Image 1 (cartoon, rainbow, N blue to C red):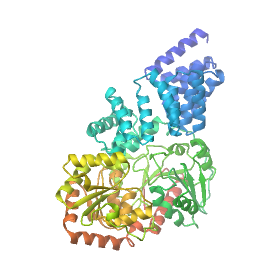
Image 2 (tube, rainbow, N blue to C red; image 1 turned 90 degrees about the vertical axis):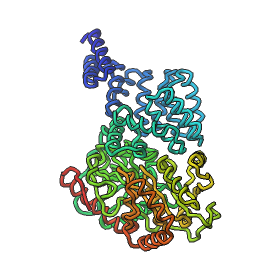
Image 3 (cartoon, helix red, strand yellow; image 1 turned 180 degrees about the vertical axis):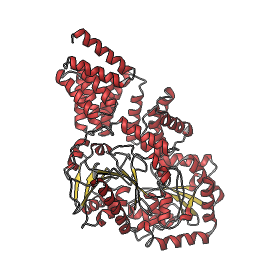
Image 4 (tube, helix red, strand yellow; image 1 turned 30 degrees about the vertical axis):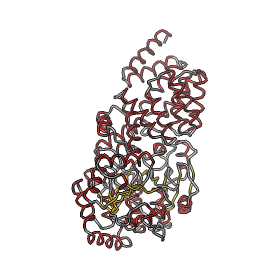
Length: 627
């Protein structure tokens, strides 16, 4: 093919690409390269197309091919950096972005990409210098506002972060990704300015498919099961989580001997997930199970980290590895099952699963929803959090455990000494409503209900967890707006777990939130002997409270509407006999009910693991499993 004809083909492929005709564009670029494999721009453009379609491995090959032909191809360096960052290969990503900037110092996209990466590395001064350069090039670019807001939030200045993003969203109301960032900061700060409108715009974008929304944000909003499925599926597709190449074929294992089960988490540290699961690791039947632990996040020197490591037969720290390198490391252990206990929570490494390092892969515990990933075969649930009618909204097959999906630690230490009410800022003669959920779970709707309770019970106070100073100030301001003395809101500072559990004894009744219930926080309250009420919602995140209360054999504490929830709370606040009976019943259930019977729980989940492996070894696809 002559040069003119090939150039015409290239221009035609670009036209298809710009018009969104992906299949035609891909065919066109490949035809150009067949005619002349030395067209660097065609390699780069094909890579862009493949990356947008989630085919990350093929895209990387295209960008490298472009750079082999032209080592000064700044755009290809930038594009390769984007893929390296997606693969969590941070060092490689920085190297690529720096090289791209050397070649084109005023390239806005590369400046922003590198600045965003530096935020992740907590190199704030360098990131801010890059954003200053970016503002000079494009003062109204929404990506700059998002980055500067992240810098402010990282420094603990939520007020500035919210102000930056609020202005950006006012200027560009259709910028849903900025609206999502704004919502995350507003939730954390309990700043409910335009909350309903902001939530509506994000949910509409999920339903219309006009933006990629964080699945973790979606489960904290007033979304349906279908909304959450669509959100997770689009997220997985957009970030190439459904298109990675398996690191190797899995070696067949014999049917006899131990099953190798690996648990991977970014939170093997002083974190609620580790506090829940540490005992279960140690209780696995070593005659039949070998336990591997993989830390995909930064660890610490905490006692719980050491306990998790000791409870595993083998433990590996993978946080410095890229997703593909981590997957290769796991694959070398020849597991039967890999269990991801992070999902789409903060700092997660779900991309590791996309490389299929194990023949059976499971989503479990920390993330209350579907991953929308082809590489997640199963999700661990129970009949309450995930009833059969909701299975259609999960890409995974459902594993239904009896009692509850949530592991618990029956050895969690509670400090012997109970602090005095006065030392915790609580009035001695008050009825203490308590909610130790993180601030992002508190919504205007439930805060309104709490303020109505305080109005109805004049001697009551509300005891909350102090997540950050901004949310504390905002909640007190919101109380005053609703006619409640802000002094009736009392905030508990962070404490070590044993002391935190002990101070639960000072409260009278735990109040749950919706649409995102208390999860570990509810188990903490029940373990410490504090009765709790919940309001059951539609989705997994909003049904955990009902699951836990069912497993402690106190289903009468579950409301199904906000009105019923308020009525239930008022009954306990007004009837000392009823409250004493609830505390007595809870104390009697703690040593006997399924919720804290970790041995029973471990045997149940082991039965599920056996069935998963039986199906896989028989060459059968995953199917719903009930234990």
